[in-house]
Length: 93
Image (cartoon, rainbow, N blue to C red):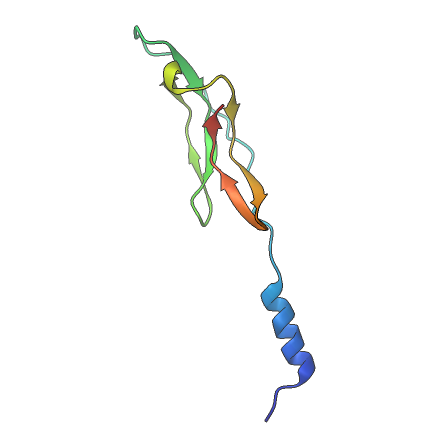
């Protein structure tokens, strides 16, 4: 028995449907501890959500060396690249 043309068209359209990536959750509240005692300059890197490929994982804030950081913290976000959604990981700019 041949499938009905309407059913075939519906299946093709469903295969073409795209879904938006899940929104990034709001940051969790965290307490910033006092900086460690060190001769090296440090900056607080806030906690942030990171995409694992199937969901978000929370990465807690930490003191990091300033020479490995930029001047502006950029949380992770989604962007469209070549017609596909792409995750831009959190980073220093």
